Length: 305
Image (cartoon, rainbow, N blue to C red):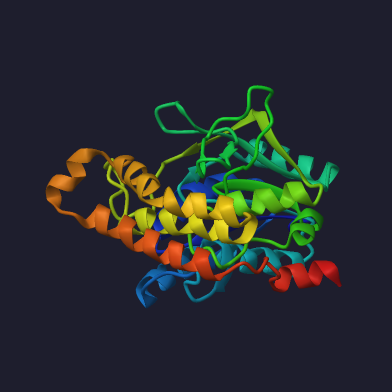
């Protein structure tokens, strides 16, 4: 029987990655494994179901309401089955079982923390070791402050006790993809949940491995659109009027910087990245000018009861 810990992975058409990475992480680890499948086709869901069945994992199928909503469903399923700590993993992230155990044990020992490892790219360079949030310009970095403090940790590999998760309220599912981990971290810190990056634990992230253009520098149109939108959703719910307006006014420059992450050469094939970033910017700006209510989702309601 699995111990009081769980691995939670949201799968969107990535059954092969589950079999490669999640199987390796779970090997020999006394943990419940929950796969939340929101794949785009019945065939992809059946592939995920076959992988889960082969390894004795628990499969939850949901509509595709976004990454955060999927994680919330997976952690709810794990909590209902007795898990007291959860480790959220991207399908394209490699983490060995001993490292997973270190994170889970740390979460159990310090239940008012959320933890992350140092995450590297396959070439060994640092992808994330926690990050900072620039409230003036509305931008993030993937490096800590000079004194080691972090403002946010990545949802690609995130560990917490279920006590901390319920206290914070889970992911805000008004973010479809991107910035939901910045929002979660912001709320965690405001509620006395400490963010910890374990420098002695490392994971490897095949960045973009689940995206349409995996293997190239170009990002998906979803990346461009939702990254631009998510930034302004954050502004809508956490910033006061003038600061929120500054983020909205700076949104076109942010959109251009976001597109440039995929390289200028991608634009030779067409304006798709620019159009996607523009769509996300317009959607986010409209949202930011009309929405100011804080997060009070179903998980938060459970925590308050």
